Amino acid sequence: MEIENFSSKICIENLIKVYGEQPSLALRMFREGETREAILKATGQVLGIADVSLTISPGELFVIIGLSGSGKSTLVRCFNRLVEPTSGRIYIDDENIVRASDRRMRELRLKKISMVFQQFGLLPHKTILENVEYGLKIAGISEKKRRQKAFPCLETVGLSQWSDYFPANLSGGMKQRVGLARALATDADILLMDEPFSALDPLIRRQMQEELLQLQTRLNKTIVFISHDIQEALKLGDRIAVMKEGCIVQVGTPEEIITQPANDYVRAFIQDINYAKVLKVSTIVRREVPFILDRETTQTALKKMQHHNIRYMYVVDDRHQPIGILNQQHLQQINSDRFNLSQVMETNFSQVKLTVTLDTLFPLFKSDLPIAVVDTDGKFAGVVEVCDLFARLSQNEQ
Image 1 (spheres, rainbow, N blue to C red):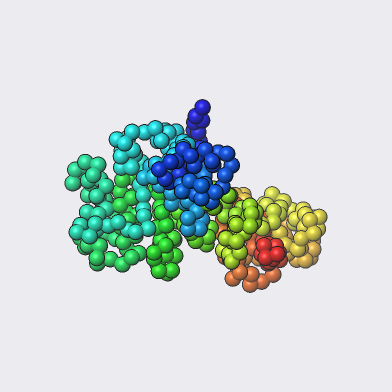
Image 2 (cartoon, rainbow, N blue to C red):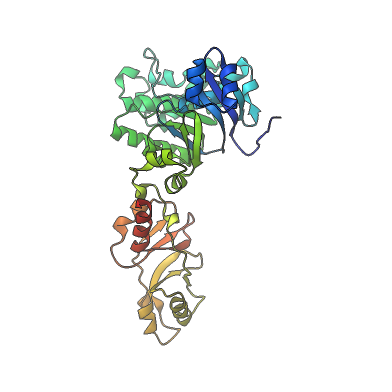
């Protein structure tokens, strides 16, 4: 019985891919519990994907990572059936595309699923604009309409001024931008990106990663990104799937992958990671009660600080946004609740969002004041002190 999943953009169920002329024999051995190596030795068949199931949500940037030969590129090519699965189901918007006709698959590739390859695949005899609009041309869209759609995509990736040039005139990073613009031009909901930045120089690669993240905040596509670079995966991914020998050994957020590795294989991947560049402030924020301006008395604030044994307390306004910080010692010197807090409230303080990484904090610890932490709406969420930061990092180094 096939299970439909109405909450996901992509849903993979029990996907298996066997390379060879007798896949049924290899499939039977796999279902009997034989390993990938044993199947290859006995049958000459290669188990590319070994019973993979996963779901990817709309608007998610989902990264699949693994060593060479782990099956990650085979898996992503099954998503648009450039590689035909041997067994299993692939739902795109609840449509099982394993059952789709060739005609339907061509339609899906033209309108719903675009792909960006490691090798740019640009046509050397066509201009940059002609390359970007090529998929639209194949779809039968008129020249005027396809140019109206393609040119804004070139603008999106910052190459509109290169529209009349040819690929030979562009650098590697620029060519990859053209490939991305070509994928965007179809206005597909899903982007499949197979190691698109791995051939680029490190500096250009980091730049492309930043540009992809910026694009995603504006476009909110569902992106499946293949990589062999764990630092890239941790930087880009909302969630990450780690593959080994055709299997997925762990799926999780970047924080879950580095703080709760499933096995030694995953631990080996993350052993050289700079945790401060991955872990978010939300993992160390200390939830503390603030002083609400014009709603509480100074004596109330002092009692709270003494009760919770804290030296400082942040002051928030009626929108719950931090506007200053109080010192317990200073409050003890105040005899009247009518005292003007602005005379003792420190207003020169640092604040960060819950979503930034821990490395953002280092230059902010210029005094002994705790850093205010706010949510995406700017509302007070708690504090972070230097001891919290180093305690978290030392925990991961053990």
